[in-house]
Length: 266
Image (cartoon, rainbow, N blue to C red; front, side):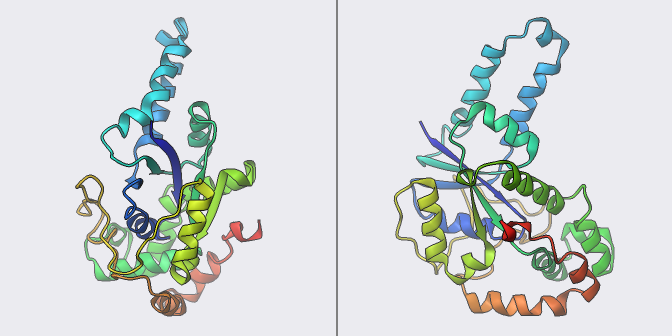
């Protein structure tokens, strides 16, 4: 039986980079964006049907939900699966607790202005980027990205709920700048948190993300959204980008979204 762990990350916070590194270890696999939160939630919504409430066979439904992860990843060769999805979001975590007891979630975070700047930098290079449909100005794109119905805010809500309402033993926070500045120590910290033997990873000649011969189809969202831009992790490149955030974003946007790093006060 495979051992399941979980990853809840802010967008543009190194999710694909982290997966590319860890997946060098054939025993461990970080997944792409997963549909399992939706699948598990969909199964539990069946409890609201009249036909179920007329004959509430929770045990039989539980047989399906409890076998969901093992069945879904049956053909994956890794012993340890790290499923990437917004598992910290209240309803998702509630559902997960019904089927898993010893839950461990890696949480990838990054300062919000850096996330916004990364999106803007990507959209400037990629005409097909989905955020280019939202407006012509940087302010319009950033405000839309930070709309309550869009991914960044939803992920922030989920991560805050996870941190505020659960023991620290359940989650392990990884900051993007730590992954760039000291990838070896950061990756080893993840192994220690999960209780998996460390692996001798390489931090150059990085592979583009793929699992079971499949890659992201970025035609759906805009070319190169999940492309790793460098063949090595270079803290100088990251620090240069961090300094350039002020050149990429208007001061008004930086000030508006600069104080959302709640994880740093814990």
